[in-house]
Image (tube, rainbow, N blue to C red):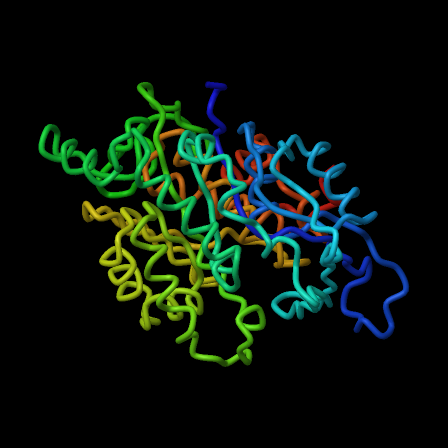
Length: 384
C-alpha cells in the first residue's frame, strides 16, 4: 500500500472572494481577490505549508471555479486525487466584509446545493482514510445527505482500522509509565504532565519529533454554521446535536470555539464543555476562546491553558484553519500539549494579521519566529 498521508481532510471547499479593502462594506468595495476557501481545505493547506503530506476529500462544480480550485490545491501541495466534479451544482463562492479587529461578516453562496455535500460513502477510498495518520472532518459535513452518511462511514472505517484505538493505547501507556500529555507517535499520551514547554531549547524553538510508529488521530472540527442546517444564527442546534454526538464517539480529538462546543455539548463554560466533549468519546478536547486563548484538556488529566499571542488583527477568518493545520502538525510530531497549543495559537495569529486565508498560511520559520518574539509583527503583505 502507498505511504499513508499525514493528513486527510474531508468536507467543504469553495472560492473565497474577499475585498482587498478593509473597513469598507461590500456595496462600496471596488477590488476583490480570489482565493481557495472552505475550512477543511484550508486546514490541508495549512498542514502542507508546515511540511506535511496532505490530501482533501471534497467535490466541486464542473466549471471554471472548480478548475481553479484544482489548480490552487496543486500549487499549495495538497493532493487533489479525491476532488471530483458534480455537474449539476456550481462551485460555491463566499464573500466577506472586513472590519478589524472582530467583525467579519460572511456571505455564503451554496445554492441550490453545494457539491461538497454530494460526497458519497461508496466512492470513498476507505483504505486511505484508515491509513491516514490524521483524518480531519467537520460538523458541516454532517448537515445534509449524502455527505452525512459518507462522513460517518469514514469515521466508522477509522474506528475499525487494523490499528489499536488511541484510547486503548492511552490506558496501556499510563499503566506502563504513568506519563501524560498529548498523542505520541504510538498513539499514547506523551510529554510533560503539566502541559508545559519542553525542558530544553530556547524560547519558541521546536522540540524534536518523537520516535516510534506514527499516531492515528481522528479530529472532529465542530465547525457550526447554522445557515447550513437551515437554522437562524441564534438557533439552538438541536437538529445537529445527535449527529455531533455520533461523530464524537469515533473521534480522538474534538476542537471548536465556545459557540461550537455549546452546540455539541450544551455547555458554554470552557472547562465544562471540555469535560462533556471527553465524556462523549475523544481523548483530547480543544476549546478555542478567542481573546481568552485556548484550553486543551486530555483524558489523562493533562491541561494546558494558553493565552493568545499579541497581534494586530487584519482578517480573523482564516485563523481557525491555520490553528487546525498546526494542531495536526504538532500532534503528529508528538509534542506536549502545551507546546502544540502555543504553536497552533501562533499560526492562527499570523493568519489573523494578514488579509487572505489559504495563501496566508504560515511556514514553520514564521511560526517559530512569532513564538520566539512573543508576538506577531505587523504584516507587510500576504504570504505567497
